[in-house]
Image (cartoon, rainbow, N blue to C red; front, side, top):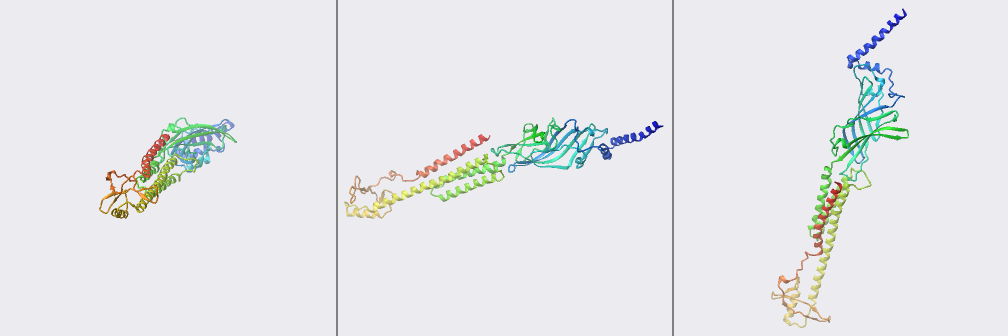
Length: 447
């Protein structure tokens, strides 16, 4: 009797257990909650898998939706990532023919999940509503979550804007050391970039521009397993060609127009020089407004500074040329004044009365050359020679009122070959050639 009673008592239990498995196998969506409640009845979310036995291995795969907001001023970048993790939990093995699923905030409330975070992040946002877990028959777990990461990126800007930056995402466990949790990348494409389009940067070959490594990092608390994903961003410099290099080139060439302006027009030369200098300074300030305050000069800074020096040298050249031109004018006026004084003080004592009148009439004229016109309309030459005795004037080795030589034989007194004009002509060649050499050297060094 006791034996029969025991058999009868066990029949309802077997019947219920078979009924639960049959319900879960037949209608997953309808009975998923009931099946999970049965599976997770004695499950402890605070205990990791393989406790006191071995470390749990977490296989990680990252799908990056896009990169955005790569900022040099704060040296950080933003990425939206689908982080996929796989591990095995023997406590979740079941005989149901379906895969049980959890999503949203329920994932964190009912199951143990790895506490992976990004060590170099300034901001780490886990979108709790965008989480999904699949529980397989053998206890393998598939976990996917969408996260937004604002990570730091130490940038080297010496070749800016022809630079390439390497930025990293470092994944580690916060609480579990290497002995408790081991992180590994998946073997096939551990990192995928879904959208590679960026405004200022580009990622070329995925295999060469993205590197995934596994490292062991030591902290005072112990050694931790670390996953490092390194991304190489190549800058597109089209924006800077349009906004900085071409305007600087045009402004520098425009400043050379002062070489073709009359040296005496110092107002026009100075106004052109100051305008071009202010424009270069504006370009230099605009390009550095969004840059960090680094202690070294960037490549674009060297170009703009060199352009500034060319423009500034052009302004200095205009002032020097004006100084020489003014000195030439002053010397010319002094010579003219001396000739006038000599002519007015000339009193020949060996001339006839008639000739003396002619000389007096010629003195009233404004001499612009060694040739003077007498009262009869004849052009005569007047040569003055001083005797050793300062009280007397005489004609030494020359004759008064000799016929003036032909116009073609008169010495050319035009000032077009003055020092100021020579400097302008030299600068017209020297500045463009030097600037061309500077550009060739600049682009060859940065190529």
